[in-house]
Length: 388
Image (tube, rainbow, N blue to C red; front, side, top):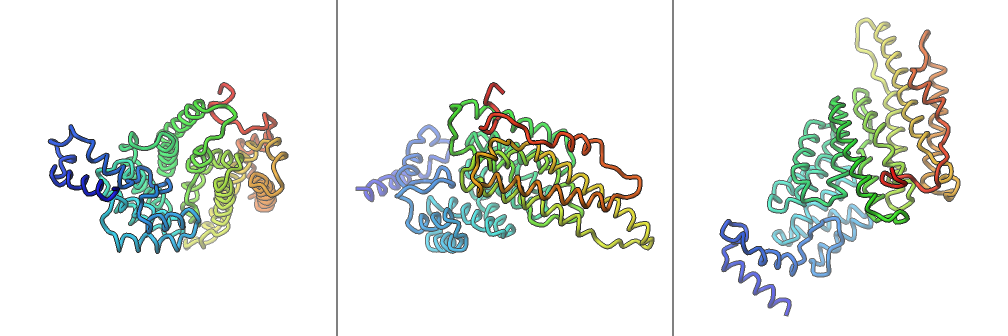
């Protein structure tokens, strides 16, 4: 019966001459929607495929969900080789990119996302998601201008995306991109937009409810693909972290996996990479080697101060009740213990390496005085709760 229905639907499409995509067929959208429903067209490539999806696609997707990325890459590539033209082609290409991205193969992932975006002009939701992921991997490759351009392209398709992505993750990524460009006015505008929209979405959820999308979106809002921070990219890596770490911390506080672990891993990796960047200052190339070395020492110390400010700001956000009520092996305890050790090490280095006449910045002194953990309601405070 199912096969007969599919044959009938395709026969209708042939008779229409694909009129659903022409001006003459716009008044009759039912045929195209029926094909999507019958064949299991993936409206959201992140969701598990329905049973009608090809078995090879479902198997590759299951490997992706299980984080067996190598097997997932093989599965999607084989599926597209054997079935290159199906209703699942674009979703397979997109998820192939996700598997590559998760392996740190950013250039290959960028190619898949670019292909998805270019081919998916008639599926703006999937196209927008592909542009969003393309921006992330381009950021990882250090191509900030192209990353921002991809985000602006995705913004033009925001109306077709889910509200959680379009109203929170997208503006948060745009804010970080503008911050890396040094356009702090636009960065603040988009950060404020993301905060307001998150508050609005959160206000629509019952106070004691924790919807599935919340930890995932909080992680996505704070996620930056940091691995190694080059010396000349210290500022462009630190500035987005200073504002985005609140989202990662809140995701870790919710203790919903895999997002809690992902968020904790990213916070720890980001601070570790920034510290390594400071410690791997390039050898001065100037002929005035003594003058150049002294200037580099001053710059190194200033960066240590700024990193100390950032970790102090993170510590201020810790909630004692959440930490104390969490299991010993919880991700939030892992983050708080890392932050304490990291700050102690930084302070020791600053004392040992402080140039003559230098002192902590006014901002760092003020933050140090206020670095005690706050004591509030044991539940994490999100925008939109408690009348905020």
